[in-house]
Image (cartoon, rainbow, N blue to C red; front, side, top):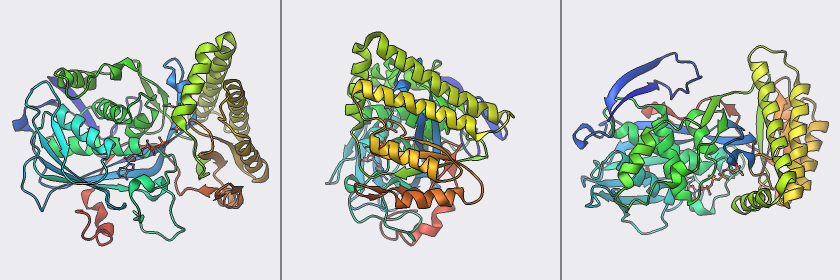
Length: 471
Ligand SMILES: Nc1ncnc2c1ncn2[C@@H]1O[C@H](COP(=O)(O)OP(=O)(O)OP(=O)(O)O)[C@@H](O)[C@H]1O
Ligand SMILES: C[C@@](O)(CCOP(=O)(O)O)CC(=O)O
């Protein structure tokens, strides 16, 4: 199959993002194995985390749009030829910041051309469904049942997990397995899958080739969805790939049509699905105006997202005209915020009041939806925190409970001037919650999605990971 491919030296470009520095080439993709090879030198890629500022729940409906910001917290993946193994098909994945986080795999042909490649974990210990599924899907897409022995090292920026107080190293190690880490809700699995997918494609395809951005995106969505065992809206993988955007989901049937890897139609369906453009999906780049900053606060309590989603969708289905009216009204108010940001970005007058009013209008409708559906999307304790920050800290424009809401996190927009950010961080650090205080995360909004990094950019942490990682 022949395709035109596009990538920039620093990352992938959405169709509306500037095209400077973009090169276009034609390559054979789904290439015969003889054309695939391990890059002799290391390959490094990183993908950002996310915050869904507006569009929680409604974004599950392809007729609605969500506003998602990529975050400066990234998950990095570094691929190196393995130094300790010459066994073809041996892939070692390490996440050296966590205890026992090493997953060794033997990749081989399934024996049936139509099925996915076989990927079997060969060491004891916990499995990692996100790593395993990504390897299986990506190597099947590449038709690569015998990759050269390779080590993939995962390094996550500190804000993804609750950390001890600073100062801490750039990629801090935590003294427990990954399943015991307290996640901060930045979409670690989506950033991991996107980073790993992209790293594998770059490492095993000939170095001169570049690939169309939607291929990375579609393949990561397919792997993430299969590993999760459910179809979410996919805004997290979209932001990890393309960066901050106004997001409209793809039809869920695109992914549910892909059979299991042991089905003889798997490879063909996967390739078709990944290679085609998902035309009804929208991911239009948007960034916050330069006058506005973003802060995330980790509330460290936790809510069950799948349960909340089920209840909200059940309420919508059985709620008739009233629930439909609330749904539409919320989507329309989300749209008003998007329009206000776009207007400022395209030269319109900047007034924080306009953003303030629109955030308040969204929150009002989110609370209404929550009350009607019987789900604590903006719980009372969060309402108090959001209102207090906006009224007590000068320069705070407004805050929301992002994504599915609940007790996990808060997200604030503030005026980027004077000591507003510092004051807001101090305010959050003094705000008492059940498990302590709200922790302001060390991150901000970032426009860019997945990007190729300089492989030598990890030398500063080499000594820190001596003996447990190949960098
Ligand atoms: N640094 C890492 N190394 C290896 N695997 C990781 C890493 N970070 C996350 N994962 C994988 O992702 C899983 C967590 O995914 P999950 O969807 O529960 O969290 P999340 O994506 O951070 O959540 P949310 O979407 O609410 O932000 C972990 O159990 C692990 O399998
Ligand atoms: C509720 C939902 O709309 C958003 C969930 O967001 P988060 O994982 O809480 O950031 C689900 C989805 O979009 O997949």
